[in-house]
Length: 291
Image 1: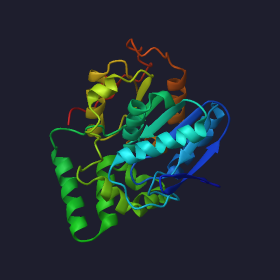
Image 2: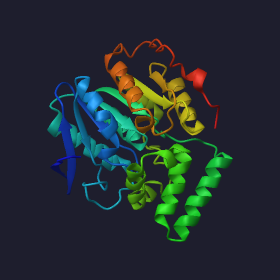
Image 3: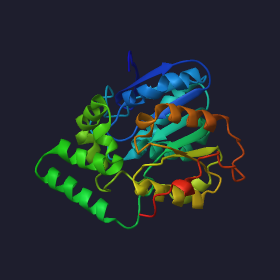
């Protein structure tokens, strides 16, 4: 953030920034990241006519605070931020764990959300671990036992993002690893992201605003599994697959990410019927198989 503003919320000065004019659009980053992760897409979203609000979640970046294990705290922060800054219902975009927070925000505070866009949230995780998950968990656990936080966080990020983590811009990798303590806190007790198991799927079915799920074509099959489960439960969810993107969708393909958000914000707002698939974005054609 170039010149962040500070908003006092329950004992922490939450750092945020607003850019542009028009309907509010809130971006919620994932575990390990901070508001700067959105730098590659903010200008495009502003050009699309949005007043873009980005912020460092509690414990990240300039929002200094000890690590937070319970993401319900982050939901409360996001709700407070919208109430005091957005001046009306906002389009909410959440990536990774930020997508879980966005789901919790929409379910708990529907009056604050006009439209929901989630980019690969690890919602409820998976019931069965795969060999790749077990290997990654072993690496994370061993590094933690040795007191090597950054190594442990790196093992998690390489599992979640695959090769894209090592090819991401150096500054982004450094930011992710600099928050290793926060990331490891969020993975405890549930490995691979806080799964929001306190929020039952029935609450997601009750969401009445338009929902879009963004999925990277090259993402870990784990996220394809999560996507399939959510769409089976809530057929009205609109889906888009971003070609050439991994879990780091907004970094791998920023222009395509912005275009997908633009389509989501102009799509049919009727959530009671199945939306027509966007040409070229049928998830079934890009699925990497079950986990």
